[in-house]
Length: 101
Image 1 (cartoon, rainbow, N blue to C red):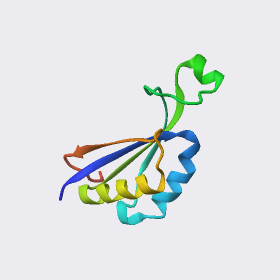
Image 2: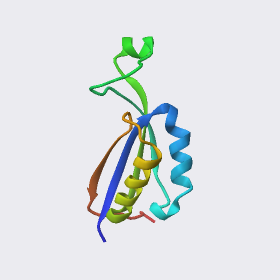
Image 3: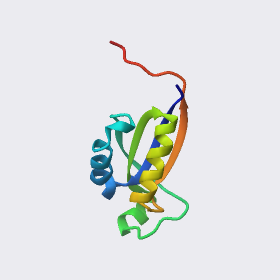
Image 4: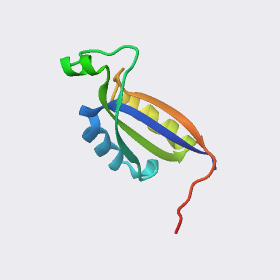
C-alpha cells in the first residue's frame, strides 16, 4: 500500500468548486485539508492592482492523502474537469499515516 499526498494549489476563486468536487468523490480518500495561502508563480495573469502591489495572490491549497493509484486517477479526472493552467499540483510520498487516538 503506497500512500502519497496530492497537493493542489488553486486560485481562491476555485475553493468552493474544488472542495465540492472532492467531497462528492469519497472514493479518492474521503478527506482533505484546506489551507488559505498566498503565492507568486512565474506567469501570473490578470493580477488585480492590489496583487500587483503586494507581489502575490490569494490561493487555496488542498492536501489529500490517498493511495498512489487513486491519486493518479484523481489527477486524470481533475485535469479533464478543470483544465486550468493556474492550478498547480504535486505528489509527495507519505511514509506513514494514522490517528493519535
